[in-house]
Amino acid sequence: GENVEQHPSTLSVQEGDSAVIKCTYSDSASNYFPWYKQELGKGPQLIIDIRSNVGEKKDQRIAVTLNKTAKHFSLHITETQPEDSAVYFCAASFRPGGGADGLTFGKGTHLIIQP
Amino acid sequence: EAQVTQNPRYLITVTGKKLTVTCSQNMNHEYMSWYRQDPGLGLRQIYYSMNVEVTDKGDVPEGYKVSRKEKRNFPLILESPSPNQTSLYFCASTRDRTNSPLHFGNGTRLTVT
Image (tube, rainbow over all chains, first blue to last red; front, side, top):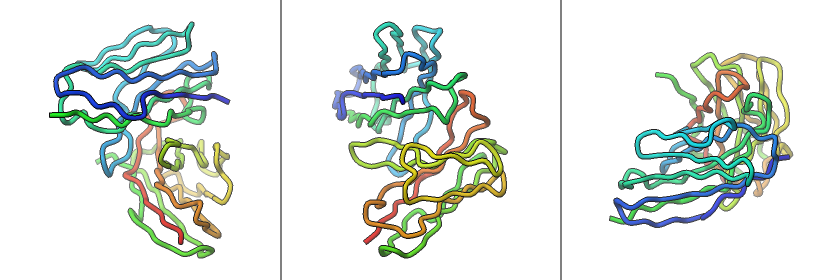
């Protein structure tokens, strides 16, 4: 099955600086890579995703990049704000069409934004 | 409001006492799933269901049962809970098994003593 490694486990940045979280995956058949944000006391929520035919995707302050050759993908958050403090999970799916039943999650990154 | 509702939010029980955690979604989603979240281990899938009366094992199904008699409900059953099942549990649903976003409930924190 798929194995997803996520680093770092904890990341502390100053408000206004950028944050980068990195994930690697093992199954070259993986084709769908979502990122979820989990705020305290809540369930994870999708913030951005990318498919294997795209190298980069951006949505306001967040962006995701994908390197299929190296089998890694990254989440970039610019101009960080206090509300960005949360646990972030990357995931990869090897099912055709990126099926949720084939979704494997990384272990999570606790992002702390220092005022 | 579109949502996934889990109950209860918190549950403390003793070893061996059967319990059920309920999950209901109001979005007419075909696909539903249960995950457990443990420190340092992330989210691991327990069971999933593609549709009514169709369920399958995820990565960590031992000690759990599920049923999908109706489209909106997907209860998680622990027939004989043990302390290693102490965890934070999440139910999730999505429109179908293609890459549409998972919608998660707010979690159930279970403690088994």
